[in-house]
Length: 246
Ligand code: NDP
Image (cartoon, rainbow, N blue to C red; front, side, top):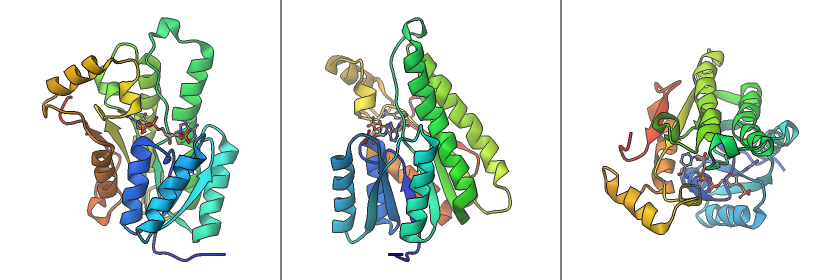
């Protein structure tokens, strides 16, 4: 059944963390939301249930963004279910805290396939299917600018995301589509906590300019702005959302 709606958003990696907060926020804003997940169907269904309970529309769709065919299917589902696509949030990503000397080929492949190929797969589909006036938000990390030891392979993938963001903003010329990236930092999340003790987390939070960690919802606020009409003149930019740490 084709459900007509004003606008449709695909959020990759929306079962948990920042993607979950973005899906909930866009659901509140009136978007029909494709809640993409990879390994946590129950978590994705819970996000859908929350959006629907709030009066919105949402669908959970499995896809491994590292696989081009999966991403193609995700876009096809969005078009079949809601008639078109207006917003792509390329949020799905993985990190690893590991010195490069200890980073084996398998981990390199996982990081590159998910963060770089995953983003490129989404962008390729968006280039083919996003409606005029659409919005794309990619995900980088403040760690690119922070030059954090142990995050070499991860920041290499996110630097690639920043580079393609600027290229893609130009490649979609003539369609009124904006392409930006958000580069979060110090977000209270499983990803941020990885490899740190509670005491280390507290220390980092207190040392931050605002004396705390950020929340996933605060990243979602910026994404909501970037996909709005109010951000029509923001294009090809990398927006750091990190409480001023860099
Ligand atoms: P989480 O680890 O909390 O969640 C990751 C999400 O991505 C999950 O929904 C997961 O789905 C999904 N995912 C992972 N791999 C794939 C895949 N191959 N295909 C589809 N979905 C996948 O991450 P965060 O919310 O913390 O991070 C979100 C984004 O923000 C990432 O791009 C990250 O690099 C970036 N970022 C995060 C920061 C932070 O402090 N948290 C800081 C800087 C950047 P499932 O659970 O179903 O497998």
